Every structure is written in C-alpha cells, then in structure tokens.
Image (cartoon, rainbow, N blue to C red; front, side, top):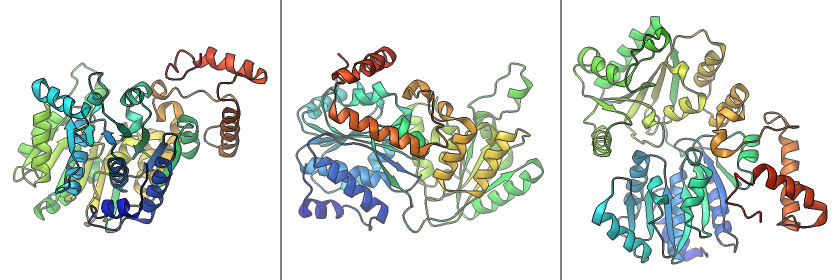
Length: 450
C-alpha cells in the first residue's frame, strides 16, 4: 500500500490537532510496514490517553485510500462504541463508509450489513469479538487493528484475519515490560507512544485508609458541587452472603450504589454500570454520564478500558488492595482526560506486603512502564498476562525480569535461523524441528508444521 504526500495530507486534515512526536514516529513505522509485500505484524504500546486511536485510524485510512477494507476490534461494547464515535467525529462529511457490528445486531439488519461488507460497500468496520464469527466475510481486507489485544486469545486474533493475509496492528494500553514483550510477542515489531498529548491535567493519587475516608468524601462532594464528575469503582457487582467473613468485607457495586444514592450523595444524580446490564442500559448510562446527567457513576471494572469522559476528574477505587497493578493503572486512566487536575483515591485497609507495595507505587508513579516492571517483579509473567491465552513458556535459563540482553540475543538468533531455513528442513535443524512439533504442535495449529 502506498501513502504519498497527497494521501497523507488528506488524512491529516481529518484531525483538528497536531500529532505528537511519538505519534509521528509510530505512523512512520506503520506506513513503512504497510508499503512492504509481507503483512505488517506490529504491536503498538501506548499508555492510557496517549493517542493510539489516532494512529489506528490513520492506518485504516491508508488502507481505504488503497481501495482496501479495514477492521477495528475491541474487547468490550463500551470501548467499541467509543472507537466508533471517535471515527464518526473525525470522518463526518467524508466519503469513507464505516459501520459498527456488535453482538446485539441481529436478524435482517445484520444480514444486510454483512452483505454490504462482503460486497465491498463498507470501508471500515468497527466491532466486538462478534467480528470473528464465520458468516462475516470481506471483499478486500487490507488491515486488521486489534485493541487491548491481551484480552483476546491467539485463536481469536487469527480468526479475525478470515484466512487472509492483511496487515495487522495490535494495540494495548497496558504497558508491557520489554522482556515480556519480547517473549510473549516475539513475532511482532514493537512501537511505543511514550508521552501523552499536551494539555492533559495532572492526576494525583492517594491511598486513603479508614480514618481519612470522611475527609476524602467531603472533598469529592465539594468537587461535585463545582460540576465535576466522579467514578466509584467496586470489585464485584453484588455481595456474597455465604458466611465467608473475608468476602463480606468486599464492597459490591449494587449495594454501594443504593447507599451513595440515598445517604451519601442524595443531592446528586448517581448512576450504576456493570457487566450484567443489557447493552441498551449500558449505552444509555454512559451517554447520560458523558452528557453530565449523572454526577457519580458507580461501576465495576467494566469501565477499565477506554472510557473517555474529560469532565470526570475523580475516582474512588474501593478495596483497591484486591486489584492488580495493571488494573489499577487502567482504571486510573479513565480520569485526567481533560485539562483539569484529577484525583484518584485508593480506598484500602490491608497489612499484606505485596498489596502495600502496589498501593505505594500507584501513589508515586504515573509511568505505566515503570508500574508494569514493578508488577512483573511482584507477580511474574504467568500472572501478568494469561498463560492460557499467550502460551508463555517457563524459561529454563533466562530470568524474564533481569536478562533482557540474553533474551534479545536469543530472539535475533531465532529470526536469523528462520530467515535462512523457514521450515527447518536442513539436516542441522531436524532435531529442533522435531522438538518444536512435539512441544507446541497441538497449540500452534495456526502454524504450518507439516
């Protein structure tokens, strides 16, 4: 695919702002990949709010300019609709044809849309995991973008390619330590957006223990009166009444919604959002929150990924000691999206040393990559990302936290070997081929090892 000055200029006119230096660098890498005969296979890491969606849309428009289709898949319907709304905002008034597919689209409407996609009448398709269903086909699929890729298994990601060989850009807002990126995503070239666009407000994070909670709630009340909005995030939807005293201490969104609505913030509008609500209910709640009709949104981690409300400048994470670092960092990324200073309150009472370590680094750092390195040291690679999804091996020699240079050398050697003998058929490599098939053949059905 080509991207000459004319195409570049037309795409840039869709963005009412200057791109950051990091975005320019990544776009250059993506355009260079898309110009090659071999399909792009690139991982884009960018902290929350760093502008990955703009890079994804730029790549999609390069595909469209070359008469090919692009697809963007996200893990939740909330994030998918947000991507679609962003695309709609940037592409309104153009001739680019874009459509949304979610699990809720059924019947004649779905069949009609699938027919248009297969007939090449849709340029950009945005959707959830519903996109990998077998009845969805494309006329000329040139680019696949997968957002929050670690939430999809390798077979799901492959299913989106539809048996074709499109360029593939996978993105994550969960910063991945460089050693882990090399081992879990060794087949991908890696791009990083390190810095957020200018004009974002500071985010101050505080670990709030029980004696100070009333002060924190009063501070929130004052900010709500100043027409700012707040998230209250809970680890579960409803309480478990099974006699387990430890679990009784875990607060639940539904219970706390009633308490906050009736006793704590009766003068404000309090909304509720969780994963068991219908698609229409979730969409309406988020629309009302975005429009300012809801002052306090009580939620589970369904808002973890991608929700962008610039006026939401406060967040309380209840039982914060029960969340992992990556999740805490993702949740905190929902605030600080506008120019106002934002505040994240970690409500937690714990004596667990690992939990204390997590809470402390959250209060002193906003650097997602520093937090990810800390998380890797605390938990190890098997828990940081799902071993079941990624097939992460136990390393027999290297230490995944400390041995970056050794792993980098091994990766270079592996790529060199495959470049010279792609199918490992040379006599010197017969033992290696046999061992790879023995150990990974059942897991790597996506790879031709015949």
